[in-house]
Image (cartoon, rainbow, N blue to C red; front, side, top):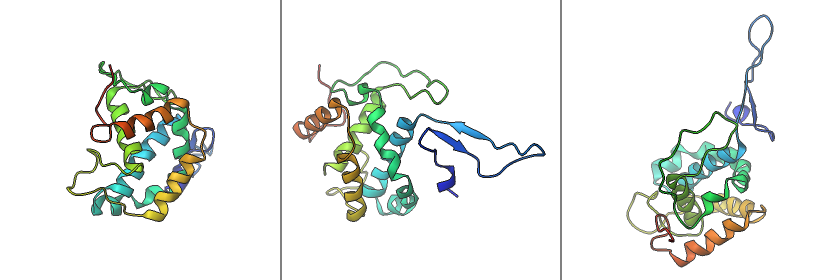
Length: 172
């Protein structure tokens, strides 16, 4: 059922059943970069989270192909300076979510976890967990085979340089 509710390659989600006498089939349109961003968060919780998160988010593996759409996020998400302005309410989909500090920090935490660095998303003590090494490799392979914006690669360098405080460190 979850697989039927994932968007197609154009960002349309069609309800799997026809309704009413006119056989109306409801659909919704989403910004695929936002879907990729949300998938990345859940994949991070599945791969690096606690045992309960690992069990809770196993279904998100179905959505791995949508991770590649983070390449279409506003490049401000990859900025080394965190946007501290108040976030505005997002416009109705399919307009992508606007960049804000929380979104930047979340993206950094997810990317940093995939590079092997622990972040605030990992609530337990001890080293970063690797719950599913085979799937983690699949995810990293997908990202390495996706043409990302230059700012994404700059962010990776930034994370390596600030591995102890990469989530909320902001360059002036």
